[in-house]
Amino acid sequence: MRTERRIIKEGYDGNLEPLFEMEDKGDAIKITVDLPRVKKEDVEINATRDTVEITAKMNEAIAWERWGTIQKRMTFQTFQKQIRLPEPIDPDGASASFKNGILMILMPKVRRKVLINIE
Image (cartoon, rainbow, N blue to C red; front, side):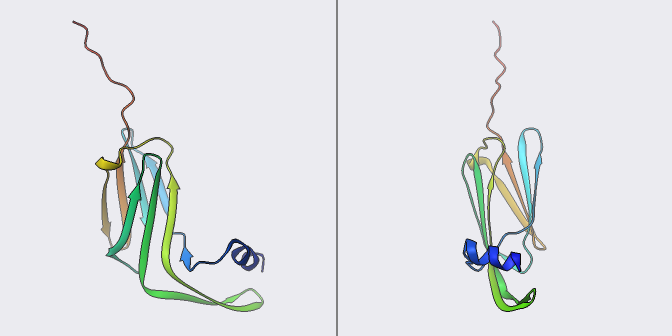
């Protein structure tokens, strides 16, 4: 019942937050996102230096009929997640792949150190 109150209080908008994992690969950040029931053409990724926003429309909506002791029907049809990145990235150098419901995004970090040659 607490879950339902929180959802209603925060404003239900028909979106689910997907599960994701973020890895620091040294010179890049890798994000893996679980997007079941989604086609590649229905995924949209927007990136800035500090954030990545993922929106994905499901093939078919998911409906939950019960929440605890109160009967309530809730339908979800879109995954949406905004992720704040731990370090600045270069959005122009980012790449993504999608296979079997798994989205992988690889984003190069902004270079901070540059080796200066001594003449």
